[in-house]
Image (cartoon, rainbow, N blue to C red):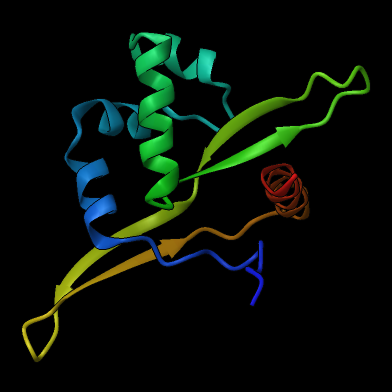
Length: 124
């Protein structure tokens, strides 16, 4: 069965908790303003670029960030990152299991197309 690129995958609870527990990840979340490149994020957060890339991977794996690819006619595409959620809730179910709920924000058609393009690039 193929993955629907428009349907967010349910992230692993531990991945989300690890990302939210990381001070640099929280700083990135606090400083993201619209779609930003890794360089923009590193500058805004005063975090080294190599660390920024690692933290962006953590946040993306946890479904807290989305990658958007900006297509350019010269073929040098740029990746930008945006927040992928409006709310994260952790609750305890009746049978004492931890339940993680991430309220994803609505995507514009341009964002959905960019995400689809990112998925195509990962597959090729």
